[in-house]
Image 1 (cartoon, rainbow, N blue to C red):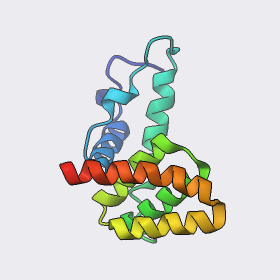
Image 2 (image 1 turned 90 degrees about the vertical axis):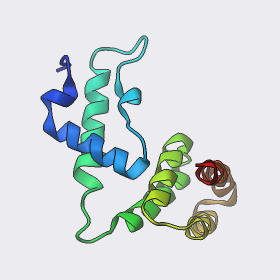
Image 3 (image 1 turned 30 degrees about the vertical axis):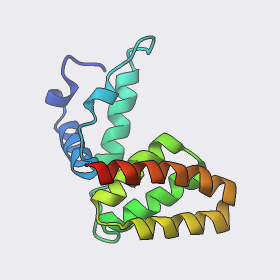
Image 4 (image 1 turned 120 degrees about the horizontal axis):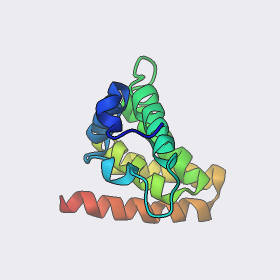
Amino acid sequence: MTTQDPVADDPAYATALDTAERLLGFRLERFLGAGPGEPDNAEDFKRIATIHAFGDVWPRTDHLDTRTRALVSVTIAATLGVLEPLRGQLRIALHSGATREEIVEVFLQVAAYAGVARAFDGYQIAAQVFAEAAES
């Protein structure tokens, strides 16, 4: 279902992209188009995933506020060892009011329950994001 302008054609997608920008501090569009060698439906996957995460899940603040949801997401990404998504989750956590100290505590928890090696891998990404935030 690839269209000429998926954002203009899908208000839910546009809203999700706006939410992502608010949480991350930058627009996602540059990451969402089909790249060289990707099939036509790659854009559909990226659009659907974006709508689900940033349109359906992140706005749910009745029971978990955005800051808490961000810390949970950092924990999950670090535990799974998905380092590029972790980078985004760390940015969201910082933009949502989580402190660097709270994020370090998350890595202590990851070390205790998912392993020290996994926590150190993730913390290297956190240190990069902390430095990036200090520069801006």
